[in-house]
Image 1 (cartoon, rainbow, N blue to C red):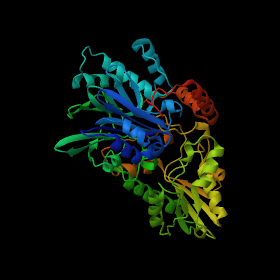
Image 2 (cartoon, rainbow, N blue to C red):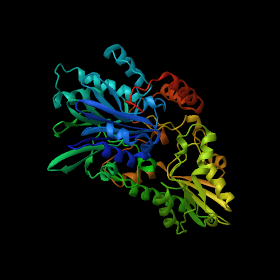
Image 3 (cartoon, rainbow, N blue to C red):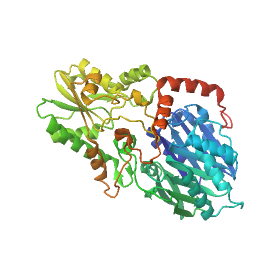
Image 4 (cartoon, rainbow, N blue to C red):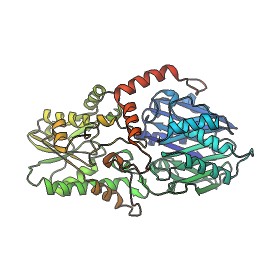
Length: 505
């Protein structure tokens, strides 16, 4: 999962891109990068780390220009080396820099196509570099030195026809402007905004509308599935549907966990969707656990707080904050190795013992992935004096790998894989465990926008909306995503990749 942003303005955009990436930091804490266009040349800074750590004053001074793109990253396809931080760029044609949120499911075939047909070399393991080169090749087909909007949209259309998987991408084309496009299913989010400066209109695209708000852009609309956006160097906006077939199937996990609660994605309030999840889960708990004596409902901060509050209301049981979160610890399910994840849970949360002592507590979380966090938190609740510990998940059982840009672990490392609910409860040490029903989850989100008939829910039911996912592909990513394989890949990448960026440190 990643966050992207692009701006075409009439004044320097370095600070605006920095601020937007800071707001989108929750979408990627592994690496950050910004690429601006200055007098016909790219200015690039990218590195591993948080936005605040990657960009120093000297870097900001170099990032001159009135247009540019930015990226924050969690590695999904590829590795976490700084060479695979984004944006990527190519010099031909014109000079193109691209940032991408998502995952290409036919990257192996595309790399072969690039080598045999386009005669292009891929320097990293990142599928984002593949996407960039596919786009570059398709734009190079035009015989003219200057591309018309039609030629740009034709090139993007050919790219969409070739590429499979999930992608929300933004790119700068030197001498032309900014382009952005979204996959035909709209799996990953992308929004369009504008602002008026000195009587001129400036445009911006971003993964979430909160990035627009932060720097004074107003939300226009979501980019449609399969749609392309082109803002030329003169600030003119062009849009076109570039996919032969498109349909809405946004990733439902955006609403469960990834997006900020103050975001709207595809006309759906993330905050309201989570309230709806809590209401429906509370109703299920009332039906199935009416015999349980629950004293208090306690959320596991922070995405589950709103859900837990609704559950408490449905059950007419007190809601309490039982954990204090240290905000400077990263997300644990993405961390490499169980040992590191276990240590991080203890550093990330601290229990308020008075809220647990002698009580039967219902802990509420947005989801259970590996189960490591859940197990450790239940242990903390018991150490704080809880009598019984019940556990509720706002999302259904995660039994299948995500292939569309969320770096969930190998399927064998998913705690729900091959286990029934009572077995999972025993594994994490809960006195009882309840999951949200998938139909209720879909209904909770869809209630905010009934026009969306379906969502990408493959992690729960194994139904991959793109229709191109085979068991062989799943077996391949399982082999690549387990902790041992990742450690080996990272070690090799560190000595094999060259950092082809940054004018100086």
